[in-house]
Length: 169
Image (cartoon, rainbow, N blue to C red; front, side, top):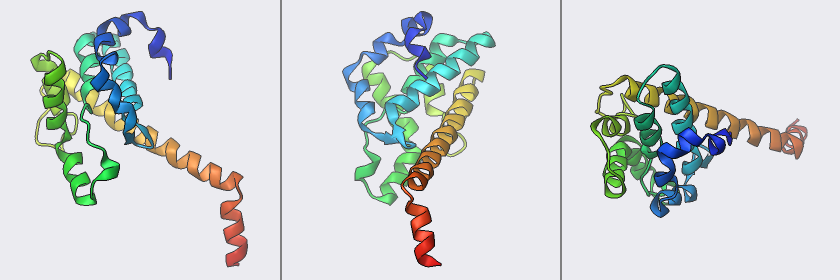
């Protein structure tokens, strides 16, 4: 999924975000079996492509798609209770952090704050908000599926499972 790198129109909309040093830190955080940076790029780019097809606000979709998980909390270093709290409240953290580094319009704010609806209280008010919410869920499922699939494949290739089954029988 590197097609976004050669999409000049997309890059022109988001280059300031992608080149921001604070934003680049997202690469350091595990997310859905990958890292948070790759996740937000997938959500942003696929949302952008769909929004283009349906004549939506491509600029706001691309930018807010990148910023929807722009918070710098490492879920691997906090308790399960704190992780659950962050899972539910991170849209607010992402909006606050995004505002520190970028100028957001009302549409972008709503896309970011409502991307976890119905788990977070903010309601998507725009079709673009619903789009990013849906693409984010699809990408999370996709990323988790391939992470689990790759782990099982690796275990099978290393005969881990088959060796355990022989021992247990």
